[in-house]
Length: 428
Image (cartoon, rainbow, N blue to C red; front, side):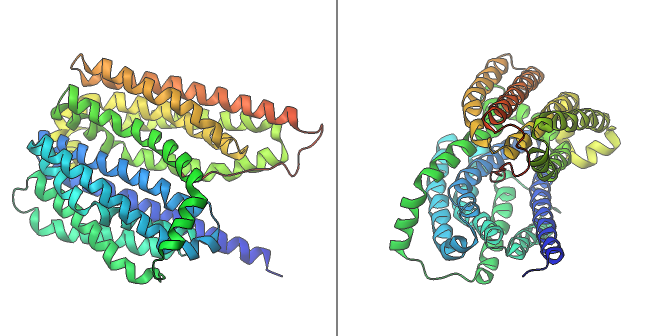
């Protein structure tokens, strides 16, 4: 019989390693954006925002069809099907690369020059992310840590000599992509993979087709809402507007990482509340939302008041564009914070699947509203519109959480508290 204390320590250690890896991954993304902000003029930095948004969109979609499916399939299945998922991720990256290469040639200019290296190396980047999720799913989190640390180290090593001279967007994109591809190649020998099997791959795709489709649609909507704003700004306002938006995003980036960490840490607490005192779940979640909302508003407005003496060395030439809209980005982040508590409550109740209907409603409406605001040519108008849409979406999430709670309580036998089921969805 296993020792409960030892089991708890092992689980806590694993959660700590996963959190550390997520932090390293976020730092790598932040470092890439900061390097681009310093190395490039504002218009090219705005174009790099499109490159990065495209990378994130493809990664979310491929991860939904591979890594997240693996996470939900159990450790034994994950060990057997790791090779299958890496092959699928590689194929997804190759297909995405062909599409992005065509777009790069069609668009041309700085955006096209930035997209072309991404198209060439995209398969390696999807492979790198898939290796991370093999590590998570098979409880070999160190595999993910090795991959992400290697990417961060290689990226800094690749850029260190290049930053002494003037760079263009093609070089920045190429160095960033090359470091990610090199980290995937360097980590692959540690993955302990079996030989690929076409028959096993077909069986896996048949068995997981429905789950893959649901996750791809859901994550596609999530990423589409995030990256779609970048595309709309670039199309209707221009690359300078994109530079302003991305500069504000980067400054607030650490706050978003903190918000994600708070959501991850509060879900187990909300699960316990749902199990032991289910009628109190929404009240407790609302208290968390109020505290995080007020706390984040104070924190983000403090960051938004950052003086030029700090902001300019941090963001470079794009600081002048991003500084005026920092207070609006502070409002967006603060209004979004209570959203995480509502999502946590839904996960605790096993109602995360109900979120898809809200996403299908909210995402197209948000992008349409942002596009209409962008016609004014004002980045501030776009961001205030986004803040309003986030506020409406947050309200809908809370109404949904309350509805799921009432329905679940009504279906339960009277007095039933302990032992209530709690289902956690895969990570966002």
